[in-house]
Each structure stands twice: as C-alpha cells, then as structure tokens.
Amino acid sequence: MRVSVSHQPVAVFPGSFDPLHLGHADIISRATQIFPRLIVGILENPNKQTVFTPDERLGMVRSLYANDPAVEVRLFSGLLVNFLQQMRATIIIRGMRAVSDFEYEFQMALMNRRLSPAAETVFLTPKEEYSYLSSRLVREVVTLGGDVSGLVPEPIRSLLEERLRR
Image (cartoon, rainbow, N blue to C red):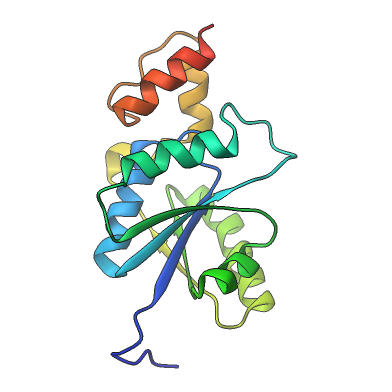
C-alpha cells in the first residue's frame, strides 16, 4: 500500500520513559525528520514499578517538547495497536540500541502487525554515544550516587536525583 501525498502518516513512539533520557530524545529527533507528526505514547502499566507516576512522566516529557509542533505527548494503557487506532496512526517507532534488542523487538513488531495489519514498525538507532543507555541504567546510576549529566535532559536529571536520593 502506498501512502498518498495528501495523507501524512502519524507515528507513535511508545515507552514507559521512566525517565526519558537522551537516547529517547535522539530517537524523537530522528523520527520527526521522517514523519510530520510524532506521538510519544507514555505507557501506563500498573504492573510495572516506576519512579515517576504516569502523570509526572507526561508532564516532564510535555514540558520538553512544548515548543515542538511535530511532537504530541499522550498517556495510554492496554494494547499499543488500540492506541494507534485511537490516534489514527499506522507507524510504530522503536529504538534499536544493540543486536540484543532485535529478537524481542522483532517479535513485538510481528505481533503488532498480526493484531493490526496496517501497523508498520520502523526501527531507528540512536547516536553511538547513547547506544548503551537505558532508563533502568540511568535510575541505577542515580540511586548509587553517580552523575547522569549529559545522559538525561537537565530538568529530568534534577527531578530524578531529588526523587531517588531522599
């Protein structure tokens, strides 16, 4: 199926973003160079232990992209393909850091396509300096007293340190 010139594809970059780090920001930047509209979908998963509530994560990410008309930030729960339908999106953006990510991400892409044949997954790689970065690793470094400057946006770094170093 070809996309008509009049139809502008909408892409969704889903994740927990607990916290959003510069690898995520790099993927967002790359995705907005390809797609005119990107929705950052922040997953509300009550079974996942997070540092920040869904509303806190929503507020942090929205404040970072408040002046970018190409980026919209939304909360979602349940199946990603249902969120895609709600947003009238067909593209799923996934960051691929290393070969070790491939098997899981490939399985998810195939399942999403099975659940919604219109869904396509686009894999993007971050800059090399962020290829090892994960939210879990950022949280761990902060918890142990390390400095994550240059790994997360400054406003998020401050909030993360305040929350994890009590």
